[in-house]
Length: 240
Image (cartoon, rainbow, N blue to C red; front, side, top):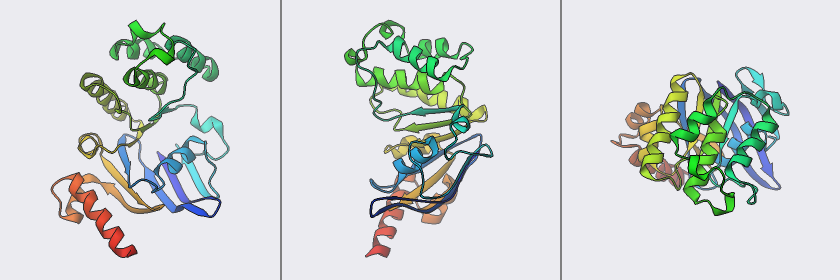
């Protein structure tokens, strides 16, 4: 369980998060969605400890996560565009992360490398890898410690259909194992397939948090894409 309680964050005069309170239950996949600039990335980085909120609290499995690196020991993160040392091989990058975290993978790393067909690429420099292969490296790093919380930012970007389906299977496996999973994606059909819950942000505020069927019922829509379009239109009309 990850809980955000009255989060506020400013960057200079820009108020990015405005009293954000959300619960992300264990054993569920929650899709965090909203227009560009809605605060999704800042919220995610706040949970990861990369951004410190101006006000509010974050707890991960009941432990305060603000200025507390230990709370994120079993947290996995997959960035949309990960930055790696370009001169290192994929194996060296994975080994570097293992050295930093000093946790046992208990065979999970080897299984993930096999599942994503990364073996032939492990000894290649990162600069030579395609975007999809780099995403696979990111997936291995995020999941190799059997995380109890998994944060995924546009995780299928650049993946071929086979790798994308394998990643979705891994996401479902972690959810079914009790992990708290947060995912951002612009592919709403993918979110409808994966997500149990939706948190919709608009200009730093939470406009909806709940399960997908309730959102469809609330908006009268027959798909998540139409439901989100309805919410975006309604939010813009209120502002106008």
